Image (cartoon, rainbow, N blue to C red; front, side, top):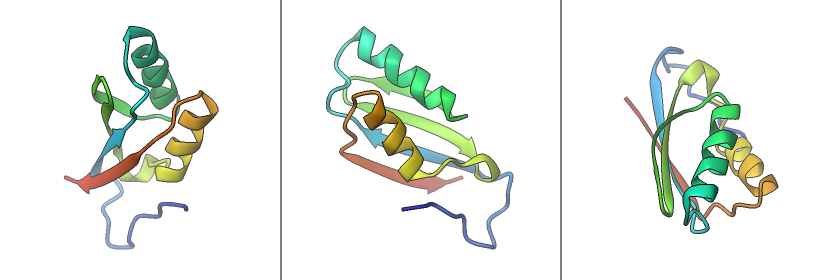
Length: 86
């Protein structure tokens, strides 16, 4: 699944994603997930046990699939990813 912004999206619009990651349970896993997400060009707004919130300009959006694949490659299963624009 590739996330492509709708044509009427402003390329500088900020997108926020909330990721549900059940295996995000301790300082080590939080640090690893933060590095993976930052490696995708995402700004990590909040990260805590079980959940991360990230933001990105829509023009730089790696998409849900890329986030999920990168986290799975690092050993973290993603339960859900929700998005909202601001």
